Amino acid sequence: MVIAVYPGSFDPATYGHLDVIRRASVSFDKVVVGVLYNSTKSPLFSVEERVNILEKATKDIPNVVVKPFNGLSVNFARENNAQVIIRGLRAVTDFEYELQMAQTNRVLAPDIDTVFLTTSLEYAYLSSTIMKEVALFGGDLSKFAPPEITDAVKAKLYEEK
Image (cartoon, rainbow, N blue to C red; front, side, top):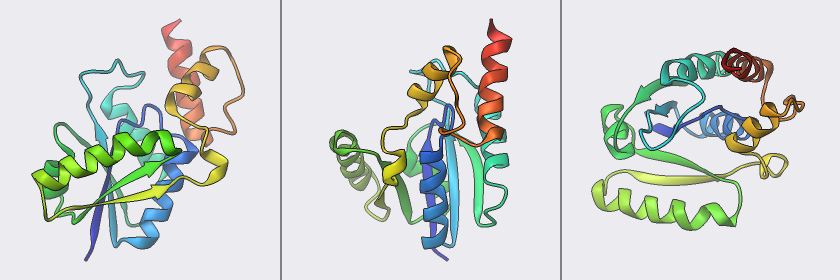
């Protein structure tokens, strides 16, 4: 069984993230989506909320599991018996950073490969940051994520005002 992990902050998840998850689920026997607790960021949602939202958004993909994690992606991969780390690329600007991380991970864990999936062209512009900014100013989020995510974003922003 080939297991892949797809680590990220997913704050919030977008159609771009879901595109990568769906495509990875076709290529690997099991995909573990790792929701990172990142102490360097101020997230909109708690880790638990992000896990819950992603579980709802991926409920129709039977070989996808969503779990929280803290620390290095290679350690998370090992804890889940994964042979592969999935990383999504939106544009060439992502590549330099992601390549550096993949090479670092390769030094830390030579037995774990990184596989890059380019986001479908229709989502190449999309990021969690853009989605939050549009939401903050009352814009239409329907092109950015499914209702289970956009409704949670609106509820969270309304709750904080």
